[in-house]
Length: 493
View 1 (cartoon, rainbow, N blue to C red):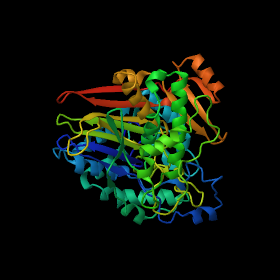
View 2 (cartoon, rainbow, N blue to C red):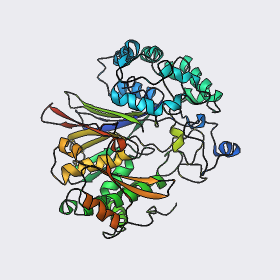
View 3 (cartoon, rainbow, N blue to C red):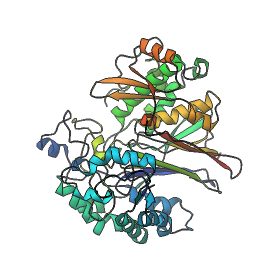
View 4 (cartoon, rainbow, N blue to C red):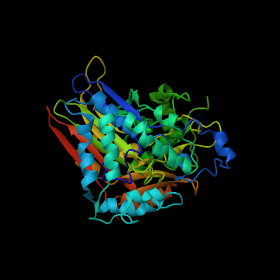
């Protein structure tokens, strides 16, 4: 994927993973997100005329954070791999694809064309490394990326130093600083992944595991906890009552996430309070069945582009993994002779002084990518039983997608494929319009859409295509059997 979905992922992005140990039942993870350059302070940005209302454009070099994905790949193989294959052998397939080339898929060609402007902006002449004769490759064209192959070869042979020191690191620093950024070699040399303890909540006899902040995994858990206070099964799948409660709960969960999620090395995050069931009961009381909330405030006082995969092996081990450069091609900056674009994850920072996610030097921004695992609700000393590895590709749809698929299975008795195929709901805050919008996928009835409008929701219906993104899950069966379920939406609609 790091070679064939170039606009969404690659060495220039970040990654997160969760790992279930089939022998012990222990669940661990890796936070592979990078930090902002040490010199990137709010004072610096304000001195250049930027404000919270007028931040740098998403593709600005100032939004490039240290790419964390390569270190995460190395650490995942080292910590969770079988050690039957070296890192070089693990990367060999990607190297071969980059060298020999691959026919570009229809959906990939569509998105390559959609985001190609990011590679053509002023100062981005090196973006041609990711084009064919200056153009996005067409469906079926063979795209070769020999410079990426070389970068991956070096990573496989020398590990993390091959990326964070030497040739690649110099090329990253050069292209960023030539375009107005402030990254220096020490920012790259000092990067490392963080081994994390996932956070979780229990719902209807199962436990959902998500990565902790700075990721938005907390959002999915907050959402489940709020929904646990409502008779969803009695409401009926995709009924007006069901979607109304779901949409209102999403608004509450997203509002809390935006208010409290940041880099735990820089801010104190009240995780224990936020995940307490009594807190979710208080939040649930905000929801009125007859009318959408006019304003949504945080519950405590002050105090897209992604690629996902999962695997379960014959030993019962499971890995849930997400990799992303954020927006299409990220910043659009391509380090010379490296074969990848740099992410623009720094666009998630706030320029509002005092905000939990306010930009600062050496800080990790609020992060959308969240791999997830599902187990039964057993606690130590009993080993939790793995039920599934799951993930969604697509920004703020990720926690909403996790929860909707679980509800489809747990509340409405759907099998995993039915749960993935069922029409979905996407709640989004439109910043320019300063309003919440509720998007209903094709398959939700007109009568339901009209009733939701009557209750005060701003409804878009029917929606098809890329808005709801794709969802992947592997469920663990008896013994070593696993079942793979995929929903991949046509992105040409």
